[in-house]
Image (tube, rainbow, N blue to C red; front, top):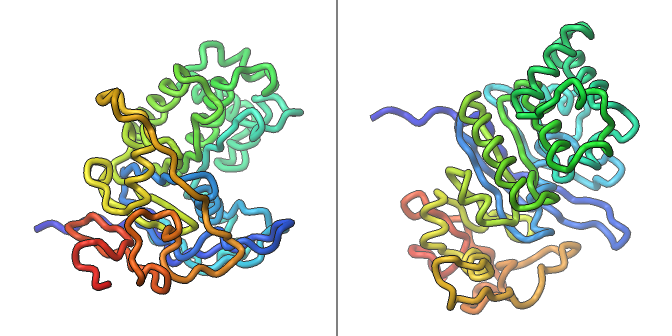
Length: 328
C-alpha cells in the first residue's frame, strides 16, 4: 500500500490574538491543517469565523501594530517556522506562498500603474531586469486572459474593472511561482458572471501548474465547485473537515448543517433558506465548552463545559459531542 505524499503545507496549533478598539480578540484558536501537493482545500464559515486571519497569519501578513500574540508553527515543504512573529521568517515564507486578496481594486496600489506593480514584483522575486520582467508580465496577463496586455500595463487600477483587477492579482501571484496559492474570497466583489470566469481561471491555472490551492469563502457553492476537501470554521476553530462530497452530503456538525440550511437549493424549491439564530460568541472572552452551544438546536449539558475534540470517523471529522464515538 503506497504512502500518502507528505503535505506541502502544514499548520499546527495556530493561535492569533489581535488588538481592537473593543479589546483583545481571540481571532484564531488552535487551527491545524495539512494540504497535500496539488490539492485544493476550501475553508468556509461566517464572517468573523477566523478564516482570513488564519491565512494572513500563515502568510505573515498580519499588521504588526494589531497583533497581541501569534503562536503555532507553519511548514511549507521541508521548511518550518515556529516563530510566526519574526520578520525574516515572514520574508522567507513568501518565497513559497502567494495570496489573492478579496478586493483587488483596493489591494492594488492606486498610484502605480499595473506595469510598475507587476514588474517590481518579478524583479524582486526572480531577479529579472526591467526588460525581461516586462516581457514576463505581458505573458502573465495573456495567461489570465486579459485581451490587451500592453494597454493594461499602462493603466492604473481605477481604470480597470473589478474582474480585470482580479486577473491582474492572479497574474502577480502566479508569477511568483508559489508552492501554495491562497485565494481569500477571490470573487466577493464581482458579479455572478465574472465570478464564474475567475473561479474557472483559478482552477485551470491550479491544474496546469500543479500547485496547491487554499480557497477561503463564505459561499458554499464556490467551495463545492472547486475544492477537494473542506474545513468548516467557527469562532476561530475548525469544527468539521472532510471531502467536499462527505461534508456537504452528510454534514455532522450542527453548524455545518445550519450553514447548508441557509443556502438556496435549486433542486428543492420548497426548501426555503433559514437564517442561523443568534450570533458568534464574544471573541474577547475565553470560551469554555463548545463555541456553538448557544445557537445549537441539539445542545447537551456537557457542551457548556467541555469543548469536543475534532474526532475523525472514516476520514470525516466533526467537533461535536453527538458524533459517533464521542462520550458525552
